Image 1 (cartoon, helix red, strand yellow):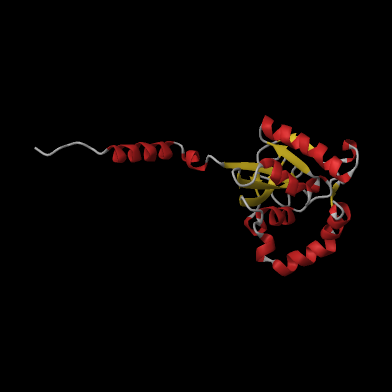
Image 2 (image 1 turned 30 degrees about the vertical axis):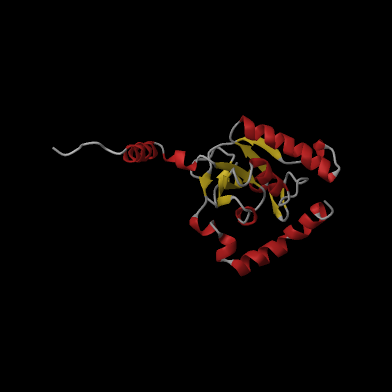
Length: 200
């Protein structure tokens, strides 16, 4: 009769494999997400996805109540970016530090040449920890810019459902480099960022 003993390593492997099948998020335990709005989602996606530790950035809509918003119809929503990041490489606080440097914190009615509800800057927080960090980041930003906290126009709001934008908006800067850079230049984004953050 053959020995039916199964090595412990095989049993352990089977248990781990079974747990991952039940809950794939175990394998991504250090991954986190953030929803940020700061004007044109093409620009914010492009600026954030290049950061070390950011695994993915997707353009979409959030903040409103409209179901299945589209580019032509997303009233009440802001153009937003869903950022998936490795929190062991870049913390939420560090991600927000970079977010601030890519927006005009004084403009709550839009960003750069883009005006209106769709382009208002908002930090959508997914839990109490993110809310606490976001509120502290406003204090930090005000100190960096030597202004009062009341001067900061960025809103901090509880996250609502994030709706993915149409495929042609994803990675727009990479797929439409000439159009994107022309738009960004005409919009005055980098000039304004230099005016606000150049001395910081």
